[in-house]
Length: 89
Image (cartoon, one colour):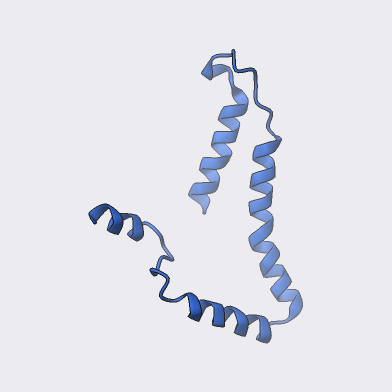
């Protein structure tokens, strides 16, 4: 139980699903009151960084498995991208 509480507390926006309806209604209200260009910009502002991170990670090639762990620069670059993305999010 304690681990579950700690896990839930680590999420900034975790509400236990209680506000999902309110959030959906707020999103609907926002899309009705805001202009279409603004809604598209907000959507892209959220979507584009995620896509850049994923494509950037996948663009780094991996090396031969026979090379030792310290010789896999691709692994370290990919790991850095993932860790930076998680810490930024």
